[in-house]
Image (cartoon, rainbow, N blue to C red; front, side, top):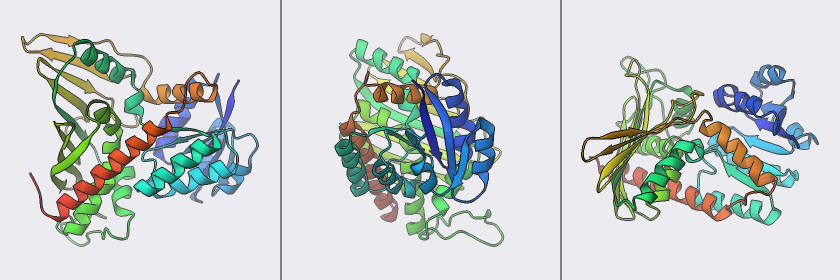
Length: 351
């Protein structure tokens, strides 16, 4: 059985990630429709895979060939488009991160999917990466006492995230000499708070479901700050464990780094994910013991993008069950952290 996929959105994530991934999974999925907001990119991407192209969502959702809707639009549109896909009677939805931008929206769309029996998967590719499963098995096998968690991200400038933090009216852009074109004015506490909030729900959310696996109970934010030109540092406590999130997009910076580190009573586990928009297999897991010995686990050929779509197929064919409560709890965790971090920025609670 092959399911027809309609993709809402035609940005870099669709072009570089989802279309190549679905090409690898032709025995399960076929892209039959691509829609954009009128920018013309849908025509180009649809032609690449022999699909129909349209503008907006109406034609795609009315297309009987579309069984699965992939929502790859800006975050503010996700909840509305999930509701539209449910109303159109679609069988399954894969929604890019974040699921929603408020707790109320997240609760509404998850409940709507549950009541309609619509399969829902949020594309948190790091959570589906085989390397993360391997790291968790190591921690469980040793009954490790987790002492701290950190997620460190260093990336070159990325238009997707730059647009994320500058698309809101509350974030005026800096102009004139000395400011990068469109750079948010981080000297303004409200702007800085908005930047941190949007980046937590749009960028840190890659790793937050994994953090919640180990430390599910958010207790409070100790400090938070926006970093120039675009980035954040957030320190918080969850289930008694200190967690540090740091991200920075810096022109002419070092090689990209995306690392989740877990320090335990006896060792440190590092999970190094490939940079965003890159197909390079799974993450790499390294365990460094107190005796300085290091173990590097094998790398899996399939990355988290492929595995998240395989997970969706298992949900559709009934070999797995949609855990709506987990989806909602992940969304609540990320949104509560984003709100608390933004509040800490407004209050000037910096490291």
